[in-house]
Image (cartoon, rainbow over all chains, first blue to last red; front, side):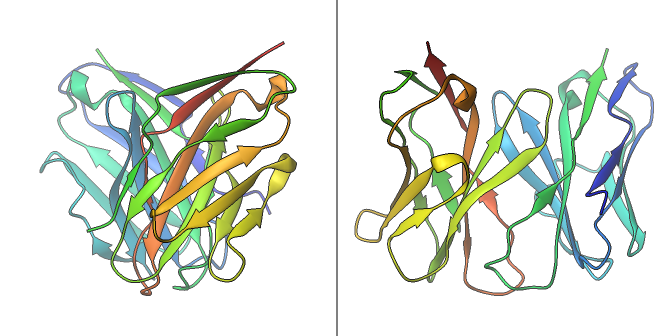
Length: 115
Length: 114
């Protein structure tokens, strides 16, 4: 298994531009999570899906952020318009089933820089 | 609400010495606790977890962690540190209710000197 795949690995964009981050979870994992990592705030949960349905998006910082999961093998996190304070590493993770004793498998992350 | 506290931003230890990375948590119900490690420019890797049973949990790379319910703590330990253990360590918690997500601490940077 190739693991959780995120693209791009690095993204540099100008303030005001739209940014789309992509994630392919492990096949068979029906939970998908988006986290954001910054020095100041550590690892924050943004949103998570179960069977392609958003379960909790209370961590999404504001309306400029949106996430979708159109099918079991693909999710996007979009920022429009982007701002310098959105600069961070964005991680996607997946896990099988709803059993709390399962750990998560993380992707390698997307490092976003907004200038 | 769930929360995790890692009181130390950085822990410094000499190679061969024991190490401890501290973690305390708050969760409704019984906790499921995890430790993850992150090497530079990489994603998080699972180290170990506590679900139930023995309070001392053994994980990858010689790490272990001790669950203490009365102190709501889950400290990460290793008897003899290696330089290659230098990394960022995250403690995480979730409740035993299905459908809840892992909540992470801010992370502790472990630096092992030779």
